[in-house]
Image (cartoon, rainbow, N blue to C red):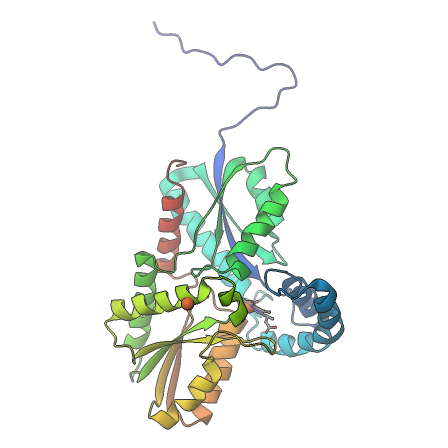
Length: 348
Ligand SMILES: C=CC1=C(C)c2cc3[nH]c(cc4nc(cc5[nH]c(cc1n2)c(C)c5CCC(=O)O)C(CCC(=O)O)=C4C)c(C)c3C=C
Ligand SMILES: [Fe+2]
Ligand SMILES: [Fe+2]
């Protein structure tokens, strides 16, 4: 007769230690809680006070930001957000898609790994806060956490500040989990394939075909590139790989940078003047995608799908289409799963 060994009795008062879990934290930029002046001001103030985003010394920048920019910009930006707001849930699309991505990833990971892997989502600025998301993972028993900033093209202004924010919270913990960070994935063949698929599918659904496709990336001050931020090179590499994957020539798929902020020079070519010049060069049908954004947001829905569309058609273009971000498409959830499982090697 075999006897099952019993675990030694715990000393009185010793807490029970359940089997530890692995946490995955999806991190995106953040978004305002409402389109009113004060919600916009709170969001923009936190975002634009981040020294990785605006590198001007605070004693010069803060008076300009608090005194001038945050007097006028909240109303202008609030108007832009109001035009794309998810009224059903009373939240911005970035929040809706971020939640859907976490739900989708949780579902596929729990099917594959049971309750061993826990998924949460958080924002660098605003809510749900990164710190609260980490606390939720810890409360669910995670002793290892994978931080996944959702930016395919690494930049100090996005990926690095997302990790900084997580580490700032971890610094305060007595019982700190083991932590890994997911690197950028601008040239990951699986990412390129999912992007290419989304372009193919979108073009297949059109009754016309574009003369030109533009991969439009969020811009960055040119000085950041000169100081060593590799984002520019990564955007160009994503575009080249996507072009190769789709079998397009260099004139059929080009790149541009959007969302310029302030008066300094940003990465070029700028999207707006480029789009304005195209009809004059005989390019009258255009498609635009935004590969640096994993979720549709104010920068894609308002600036590109509304603003740039109007610019192009007013300049003499005949047809314009915007190719949505990967959002919660099954192919995107599959890509996130693949990256997470790869980065959890040795833990899972
Ligand atoms: C001040 C400089 C800015 C830098 C540098 C910057 C880099 C950067 N941003 C994204 C992604 C997003 N930015 C979004 C909005 C947004 N970005 C800036 C400024 C900088 N971004 C501002 C002022 C705003 C707010 C909108 C506005 O007032 O015009 C968003 C959208 C958020 C949403 O809620 O929908 C995203 C996403 C990247 C990828 C990037 C550098 C690589
Ligand atoms: Fe931005
Ligand atoms: Fe470069």
